[in-house]
Structure formats: structure tokens, C-alpha cells
Length: 78
Image (cartoon, rainbow, N blue to C red; front, side):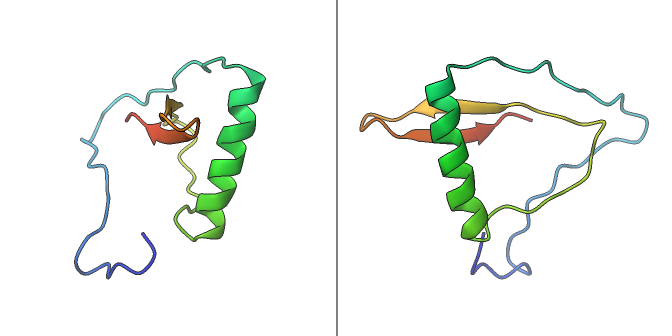
């Protein structure tokens, strides 16, 4: 997260040697949801919260959670 010292907290996913990579099937969603997802991802990208990584053999779908006020929360379930 922007502003946090990496000496204090860093998010990593420890992988065991020899684990078989998992690539999830694409989840379908209503086009209106994807418009909200794109807007949320652009907001997080512009804030410097996201970065590009290249793990083509490990792919997880995003999970869209609707909020009470009509907004969405974008999550990833590893």
C-alpha cells in the first residue's frame, strides 16, 4: 500500500517447491459489473496500490463483492 514502509509490512504468497500451478477458469459477470470493476481498478492503479507482475502459470479471478451503497469491493481469492 502506498505510504507503508516495506520494512514493516510486505504481502507475499509463499509457494512450496514443486507445487502444480493453478489457472482458474474465467468467471462470467454482467457487463455493468465489469464497468464498475474497471473503474475501481483504475482508481487503485492511479493511487499506486497495484503493480504488474508476471506469473502466467498462476492466475486467480477477482471476486466482486457488492457494497450496500451500490459500490463494489474487488477481492482476489488465492
